[in-house]
View 1 (tube, rainbow, N blue to C red):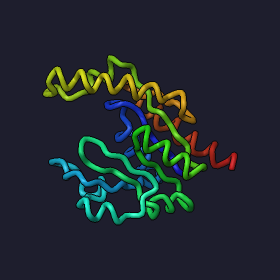
View 2 (cartoon, rainbow, N blue to C red):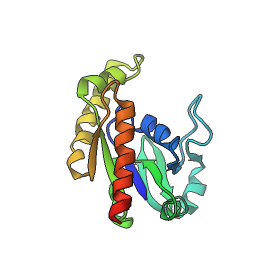
View 3 (cartoon, helix red, strand yellow):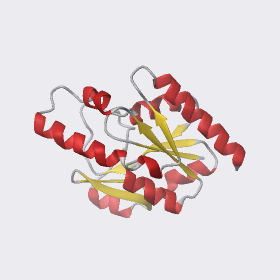
Length: 174
């Protein structure tokens, strides 16, 4: 089973991905050409140079903020025998859904005022405005996902439980 999480910046996708990973769901790692951020775990991605990225057998890839991101066929094959989760943007999720029909897309929803509150305080107003414009665009994708899960403030455990239940129910219907 492959669960694909998507949603706007600040919706809690990465937090949910980590938390459900503690329940035995395997987290798939994407390849990226971007540099590792300070404090970011070495296993957050496969950090590679552009030349190496071009050699990877990818099932989806996107260019985001001048860096490439992509999920390898080798990673996706893990989902044939294990329950897996990956966080992607809408373009990546569409590519996966097209190539891997058993993938389940889950949009992580959160009210706009909470998303704005979750942004780092040091972001300047112009960048904040751009992020919030992207949030509006990202939110339009919700209707095309298999499920929508709300991750409102204080409801992380409920959101994770709902995703784990979606996983159980999806396996039953296979």
